[in-house]
Image 1 (cartoon, rainbow, N blue to C red):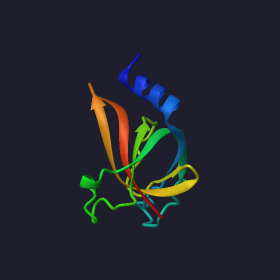
Image 2: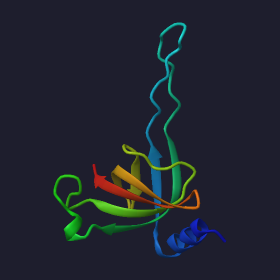
Image 3: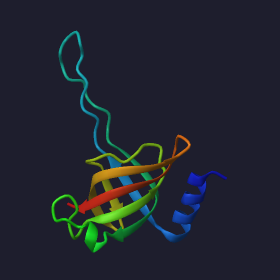
Length: 117
């Protein structure tokens, strides 16, 4: 069992169900006509995560605010990116930043900074 599998098992057992909504891709331009091509629709992914508050020492009021949520998220097919939306406990948050924890070249978990819309 890999470390990512162990993390997923623990998050499934002790975490909460979350849904990640990835933003629409930036439209590509046809090099011949110069017209914007319609981007594909936004995609979603479901998984498990562990939401928590930031420690008071981490909150600076600018980058990390008092109501931001720190989410430890299982590895998904696509990493959450800035601007994605995550629904946790029926509350929709915007992803401000994502750190990925890696071991031997593979993602193990994601740590996302979430902010309520």
